[in-house]
Image 1: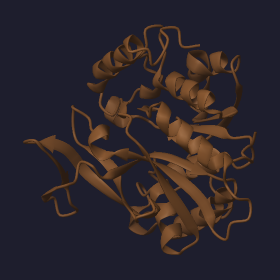
Image 2 (image 1 turned 30 degrees about the horizontal axis):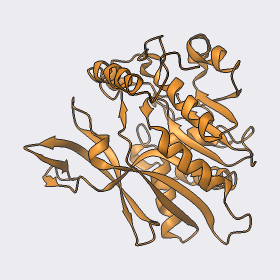
Image 3 (image 1 turned 90 degrees about the horizontal axis):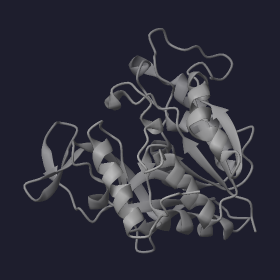
Length: 305
């Protein structure tokens, strides 16, 4: 069986959660965190190892909460996303506080990642179906494709909303073969008066199709993508302009550009599972109830591992 890896982006500061490490908040009956369930589902689907992307200052707490436990269950490695981890010849702009986004996060794995991989957010619950579909797609890839062959878990937009505030989603446009045409970063998405609405760049509300596919940053990628990230990160840093303090090097934008340049093909794999996560502090109670319900329905054992 082809080797595959689960890459978990867990370096986020979690500002909307009040500045704490929301990825480490217990949500299961035995203190499990969301990552426990993601790792369980990924291993069950056939992924062989886990790479945690964290900040160095989070390492001690991270190992105590989840890392040490997981090392007894599967092969685990660590990559560190730091604001000053940038190519030679560049400097961190004065006043910049946060690292450089999800593209830099995945790039931090370059020295330890040499197999096809799925990348996910630490604080999102994706469900079992998506891991199975992405894994099976990755192990079935042709070795000599003319373009980079990737996949994206396509969640149904209405299944990805929070009850506690608006969210930002990458809304996907696909062709008849479920190949991704573009990802449109869309903000201010929430339920309102029985509809799903979003807010455009001018601040105007618009209705949006609740059955649209949404990207939840769950991508199936191959090691050659890391070379693209390396080159793209240098170009990104060369063109910061007046947004140097906040601009981010983001996976959806990078992949969208590759699609436009016809350098990549991204298959959208539909999943009907309901996403949930801790976007807002108020989300935690509903996440705890959701896992309790999944255990009662037999989706998970009460003792996960």
